[in-house]
Each structure stands twice: as C-alpha cells, then as structure tokens.
Image (cartoon, rainbow, N blue to C red):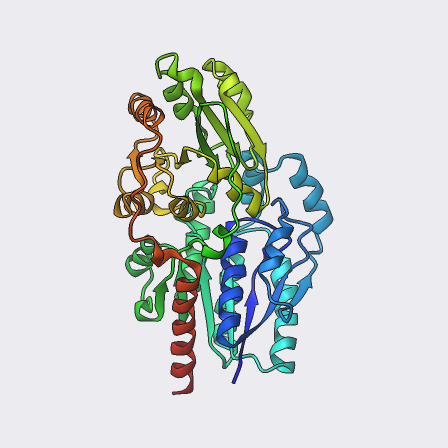
Amino acid sequence: MAKRCLIVTYYFPPTGGGGVQRNVKLIKYLSRKNWKFTVVTSNGNDTNLSLDESLKSDLPEEVEVVKIANSDGKANSRFSALIKSTFLVRFISSFLFVPDRHKKWIKSAKKKIVEIIDSKKIDLILISSPPYSLVMLASELTREQSIPVVLDMRDPWTTNPYKIYPSSWHFKQDSKIETENIKQIKYGISAYKSLLGFYEESVEDFKTNNWQYIPNGYDEEDFKSLIPQKFEDNKFHIAFSGTFYSHINKPMFLLKGIAAVEKPLRDKICFHHIGDSAINLKKIARRYGLENNIIEWGYQDHNSCLNILAGMDALCFILDSSNKNSDKTIGGKVYEYLRLEKPILALTPLKGESATIINETNAGIVIKPTDHKQIAKTVTSMASSPEKNKSNKNITIFERSNLAKQYYEFFNQTLSENIK
C-alpha cells in the first residue's frame, strides 16, 4: 500500500539550486518505491534565487504542489532583485529578523498543513530547512501531530559560514532558538556529519539515535545524456560553479595564484564561473592582469551547467578559511564534481567536511585558500598534465538513488516506531 509524505519546503521548482535538488531527487526516487508526495511550498516570487525550469522534469505528474504566498513577497522580491546575493541584503535581513524573515509565511503554511493532514491520509511529514524558521515549525508539529515529523537539515544553522550575524546579541538569540527547537525534534536528518556532532555536544537530551546523516549527492541519470561543452583552443579550462558572495568565497587568492603561473602557460589558462555573483569578477581579474583569462557564464539551468562542467579540464570550489565555520560545510556541487571525474582544486580548510570528502575519494587536492603560491604550483601541474587525476573512488555512496534508499529505510523506521 502506498505511503504519502507531506514535504514542507520554502524552495521548490521552478526555483533552482542545490537545496531544491535534494527534495526533487528524493521525490523522484521514492516515488519509484510506492511513496506519494504532497508538497507545501512558497509561490517562489519572493526568493532571491534564480529559476531552473529543468528540475520540473524530474517530478512525477502525480506530485501535488500547494503554493502559499508570502504577504511581503512583492516588496521582498523587488528589494532582493536590486542587491541580489550581496552582503548588504543579507546583513539587513539578519539584523531585522531572527532567525529569518519567513515567520509570516510559516504561519500561513501551518494553517494549510493542518488542513491537508485533516483531509488526506498523510503518513509522514518531512520539513526541509533552511529557512531556519521551518525548524520552529517542525518543533511545533512534532508536539501537536500524532504522525511522525522528520526534520531535514540541508545546511547547518548557527555554524553555517554563510550565515551573517550583525551582533553578538543576534547570534545568542539565534543560538537559543536553535537549541530550544532542536531539543524538541524527535526525528531528524542532516546533510553534514559535523552538525550532528555539534548537536550532541550543545543540545541537552539530543536524540542522537533518531537522527541520520544523509549527504547530498549526484543523480546518475543526469549524466547519461551529457553533451560536454567543446573548447578547441588547446587551453586549460578550470571552472567554479556556484554563487560568488561578497563576504566569504571570493576568488582573489585563486586569481593571484593563476597570475603567478609562469608564461606562456599562464596565457593558456581559462577560468570559468557558472552562477550568480555579488562581486565584479572581471574587475578583480583585471587587478591581476587576467581579464582575458576569465569566462563568465552567468546562472545556467542544471543540465546546461553539467554540460559546461563536463567540458572542463579541472574543477574548483572555494570556502574561505578565515571563517571559523568553513570546515563545517560542503558545496552541493562538489558531489557532481566527483561524478564528472575531473581533478578538483579544493580551496578549503585543510581539515573539515570538504577536505575529508576530497581526500577520501582521491578526487583532487586540498589547499589552504590563502596559499596562492601552492595554488600556482598546483594549477601549473594540472595545466601541464590535464589528462591525469581520474581516479575517483568510493563515490557511488553519493548517488541519489542510493541516498533515497537511506531516506526510505529511515522513514519506515520512524513509521514503525510511531506505531509502538
């Protein structure tokens, strides 16, 4: 007999991004295991994320999507569009709203969620965070509903290096909210091992045995029909896929490293950026005499992005080691980097979640993000022998269908425990 899961997530197609893919791929593969899905989400017009219509193709036709409007949607959308992804918009939002600006939406969504539970046979509720105010909703529903409520933490909360705190007061308030609500969660999933360790140490009576680590990953079916971008210029092409923010993962030391590569090899290096940006990449490149070495693609839908990445000689990602929490996160695109079997230049803290996955899979080299001399040395080696470094191992554990099996088993476990 089919089971029905009610997913509550603020971000869902046509909104794009790695967090959206986590839920889309879960629905795709669990639907093949006789699970049905109803999704409560936002109407999407008040996010500052780019759209990706291609993700809809992974959703079965029978998925029910209920969209809840945000009363502040239009104003927020106009504001976000002006200063998209910049430090300023994130700072202002963090200053005014703790934990985030979505509390009004949560209140509206909860009314609809209760209606759905009362009118349909819902077996399990999965709440996907961030936004972190959804953790508060998960805590409330855990106390109020008889069916299992599972919280899926796609990102860390107060240990998230991308999260901005305007003052120590904001951090303390957010930490208090996090601790109080995580303590109430009966069933949880985390995309990060370090987050579970943090909760074990900081949250009294944390229900460790009722939480599971399920990382992000790649979908093998996405790679069956790739058309790699062709570059017939005898150059070395290296790419970064994702958003460049103005306060955490700027590529200055990478570009400084490339600038230190000796000519004529330096002139053959092309650095590609695929994604949104809050910085002027060309301007920064000009500072290092690399304005002709930069290619900007802008935001691309998921399939187009993979095609571009498939044509690269190497791939890169950056986590600023000056932020004490950079060792506690992994860029979602990293898993697809692994599947593309290109050498990875990981500019991250030498110890942490990202470094561990790169080292354990033998997928590339980890360098301190500020070590431009070592970056220059490594890029020189990669550009001199681009055919090397195709020995990734142990990556099938990150395949989306295998990850969906872990969700399947965890869901069944929670359902069986709920009957007792």
